[in-house]
Image 1: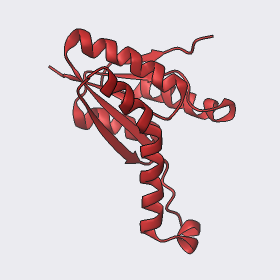
Image 2 (image 1 turned 135 degrees about the vertical axis):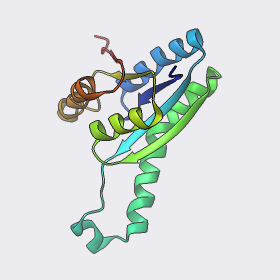
Image 3 (image 1 turned 180 degrees about the horizontal axis):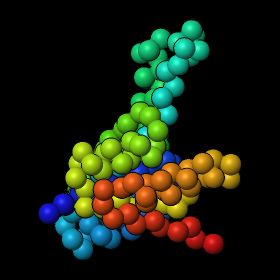
Image 4 (image 1 turned 120 degrees about the vertical axis):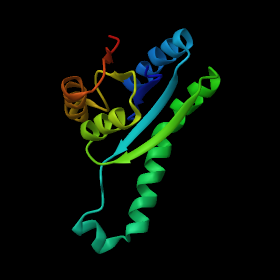
Amino acid sequence: MRKNILVPIDGSEHALRALGEAVEMTKAFGEKIILLNVQYDLETFHTRRFFSREQIQQYEREMSEEVLSPAVEVLRKYDVEFDVKTRIGSPKKEIIAEAKEQKVRSIVMGSRGMGSVMGTVLGSVSYGVIHEAPCPVMIVPARE
């Protein structure tokens, strides 16, 4: 039986709210949380004209650490077993790929992501994950 819960973290309040739900699930069922941050691939022809591959990768790592840090603090506070992962690429595709590779029991994620304009884009990530995930997906709604 699958014993991991995948929680995609994008730095939004919605993602942290979803993490809270996942913590409750792990406490009830003794599961481990896999925190996943997906950074868009910034390595393009244009960026390579100005930055080295190493500089781009370092920036992606720093951005991921910044986004994941509050979530890691929450999990340490509640003494929950967890792993931290960063993937580069399309959020929807990478979330689904991680879920398949780790054979997670479920995915718990926020209904929307960052900001109003970005929220529309990242909301589509939730929609896409629901339709392509290899496991049950819990979408935690925004509080009004």
